Image (cartoon, rainbow, N blue to C red; front, side):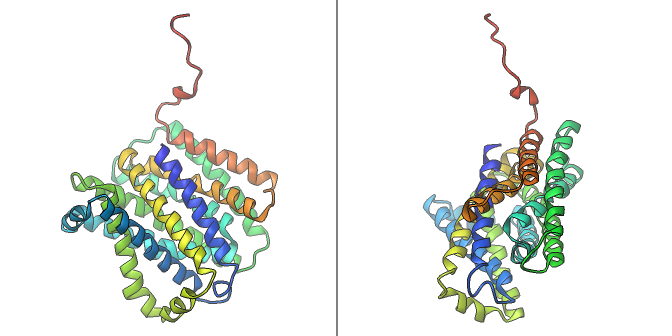
Amino acid sequence: MKFGLLSGILWGLDTCILGIAFLYHPFNSALDAALVCAAVHDIISVLVLITLVVARGKFSQFLQALRTKGALIICCGALMSGPVGMNAYMSSINNIGPAPTAIISAFYPAVGTFLAVFFLKESMNTQRLVALFVALAGVIMVGLQTAQGSAEGNTIIGVAAAFICVLAWGSGAVFASWGLQSTQDLDCDVALLIHELTSSLTYALIVLPLVGAWGFVAQMSVAPASIFVIGAGVAGALSYLFYYKAIDVTGAARAMACNISYCAWALIFSSLYAATMPNLMSIICCIAIFVGTILSATPDWSVFLPQTDKHM
């Protein structure tokens, strides 16, 4: 469970930092800002992961893994959670802000859990499903608040983009779990590098040239606010590492249930940065998300009960 929760904390930080970046020039005025940020975010993550894999002496494992079935499956998942999911996520942040985006997009475990149970035959009993939907109820309530409130961008586009992200991330996690299961001894660090490299190359060689966004990449590279995108990329890489470890250890359904806590962390980090207090409904929903997250990821709830001393 700890790996999933750590991935949630770091992804919440990642979300908050990206939200700050969109407040500054040139990210607050360019139509290509969300797309380019998604691309650069993944490229920064790849650089961090390559450094980590080389430092741990796993580069030869990476080269060998490229020829496996698991690598091909992970590449498919990378296209969903990378270019599709991340671009939708960035577009949503740009339109409705980091905390609302995190809260709405946190609905992806419902889709992912259904796919994991149906296709991968992962177990998820009734009480844990109820706990997951308690967390998702909090997601929906704050999402509705967002849709009714004011926003600097287009609220409809922002909410729609967040739900596209839900579908992409839900299926992407299942592909990741399937890929790790398909190849024996496929290391999590290596699998994640394959994932991020696929996503980054797709951005660099296909997506950015198609929309003519390389000019904006050059512009943002000299902008002071680009330091926020770099920081988000590092936080994102570490979040991915813990997420893949959680998928490998606990399976896709439980890993997603833990990772969903990022929406609450994003709200906390955003509030700390803005020096404001969330409203009462947001606080209640965050508590519901945290409690539902932990319970849905815990197979045996008896661990939360007071333990009696057998010697008394």
